[in-house]
Image (cartoon, rainbow, N blue to C red; front, side, top):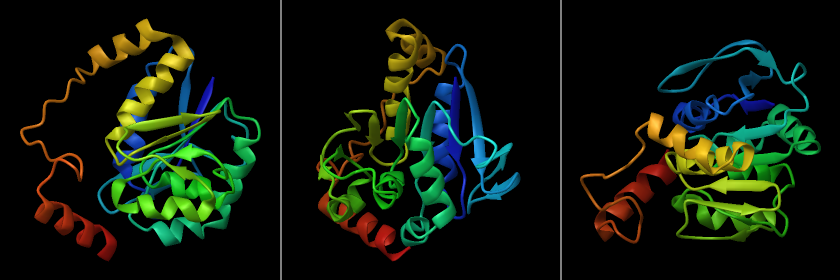
Length: 208
């Protein structure tokens, strides 16, 4: 089973690494970072290495598209869009983390599909004909699974692990990672965070 996580200019490393650390534990799965060319692909915070090119892994069984801080740039990345569209034709599951869903949309994959993304970009889903779903960690519709922002990708990946290898395996992966979040603040959603914090984060994200 080949799981491909595409890297591209401006990708968010956390969006890629969260699912990676879950899915690499799925029995029989090989998780590969892919890019237009082999080698190091840096984001603003971390550096990952693509060990296969888009051309070398054109038909993965599972595709996991990470998000980015540069939304407009990623939606205009024709090499990335072509890869996502081509890979989706033969995947068992096509998934995204955070605003990676907008890349799926730009590839024409979300027409009529229930989908989610980071809350601050939720209003952008409609332009691709998607049916936006708010207030959830991830949404499964057909073979497409989209997640909310950044760390919601871990939840999505655990769900995907269950689909690929069964509930016991997914629970074992969760336990091995000791993924039992109990954050010190109830501020992880725009509904629970104070309004001033929500507006601060919205302005920071939209200004970046």
